[in-house]
Length: 322
Image (cartoon, rainbow, N blue to C red; front, side, top):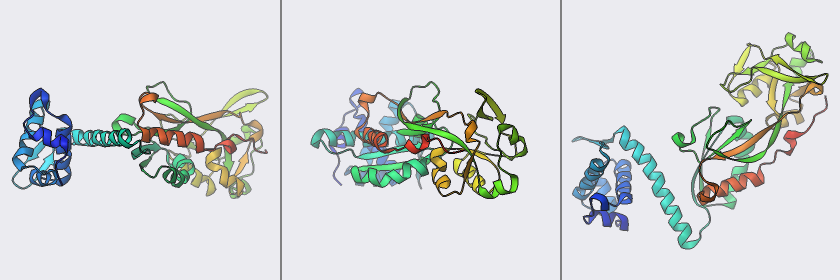
């Protein structure tokens, strides 16, 4: 593979303040991925000594060791790994920018998305085939986790989050709203009876959440005023799919988002209860990201625009019969 113009410029003697930093990054990426200076040199069409000198110059400029060399192997230091991971992304962004400017191409490149397991499976994953058909140049990495991740630290482009957002530097696009519904399986209601008033919940198993932002009670509207019922301590989980499975198995009552439980309600696998006392509160679902809206990479903007146009949560705001 012939050397890129950036690598050729760096290898021809540019140094100090004139060093081609993109060439250095490209060289570091090749060294990291090919495992040796000589293999990286072959892929770039350079001599091993040229690659070695460039890496030494980069380490001297940054004041840290990036590579641990021995007679048998070469390994990145933690600082080298950090520069490799960020540098690889910078180079990918540069490739995409040049392609878009040069040929006005469609959005292309990697977009990393983070969301909860239940939101991902119900809202996001079913839309992936349509998204890729519309933008075949995109590649996706989807991280399903119920932990709130740091977008910068995790290298995430877009996160889908429901509930009120705390103050932050993130920019949010509203995708829709959802209601919360108290549900139980028919088998549980046959065994334990159907609660007809929030006061009756003391005789029932209430399934709860154990993640940090969880509210430890269920709100209801009784005679025009809001009341709160403690969830209890029988079973608590931090995953929406686990909560749904517990409810389907007849373990107890669960309070789930309507978008998550909609198909189970339609199929009568889960039955809403206490809807006469539902507060009707709507919780927003947002796609959030960092950076200025007018400076988003085309690939990120394409995914955000698609989600805003295609996520359908109209059913998740409906009032259900008691």
